[in-house]
Image 1 (tube, rainbow, N blue to C red):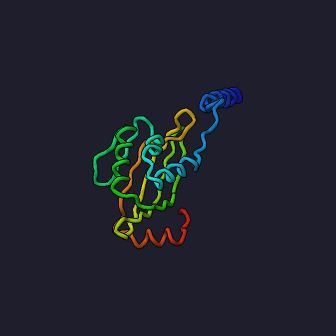
Image 2: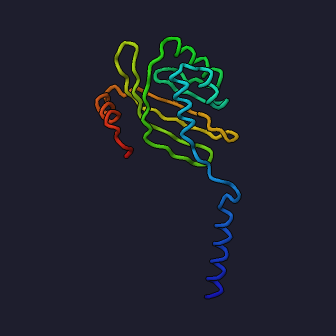
Image 3: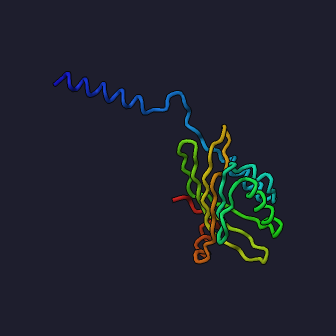
Length: 161
């Protein structure tokens, strides 16, 4: 019995040792990447925004076809900024880092050219490429029916929960 227990413990130790990622540091997602993106958007800088996406990124805007690849994303944002630039506030609600990917989601408030405000939600998937965090997937949509609750959450600085 004692020999079987020792054998089991040794086998378990060998299996668990093989499961770790030895010599690799866990990646940490920096808020700097999202601040850079938000700054580039606020400055209507399509070139800076495009550089923040992976080469094979996909942007999924509401009620529009998917935009695929960095050059198409650059063109999409140029066209968007030529039409109008609206100030926006972002309220990050959740960030989950798993390996070289980071999932980020939250809500936004967008000042529209006509003086109205759009409230909505967003999801982003960031990918670590050679030590730099790049947007890999992004989507957002309006929350028309949730305007009052989104306004209250942003205005009150509600915590994640």
